[in-house]
Image 1 (cartoon, one colour):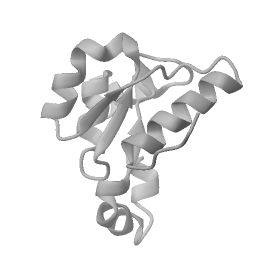
Image 2 (cartoon, rainbow, N blue to C red):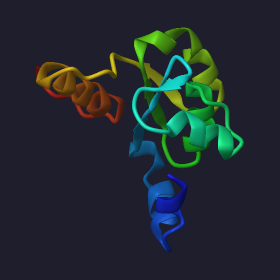
Image 3 (cartoon, helix red, strand yellow):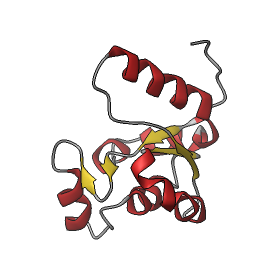
Length: 114
């Protein structure tokens, strides 16, 4: 998120919409599902966990969708300044992708029928 927020005007625009912004954690049970997110978080001095992600996104998002595997850490996410939303985040197909999209939209206050 850092490089995106470094673009002039973007950080201010995103912060202005914080209450309507929902992030999805790329970390599940302390590891990135895919890619280098866990390594990059550690290299930038953050904890490679949903709590580390919450601390990073707290200035720009009001909710963080975390995987069911991290449900026990929901209170820590809340304490970091984001409302934790627990949902399955691993998508193996269209049904899981649609369910995650509905969870993200609901976290942002938009209800979508199944």
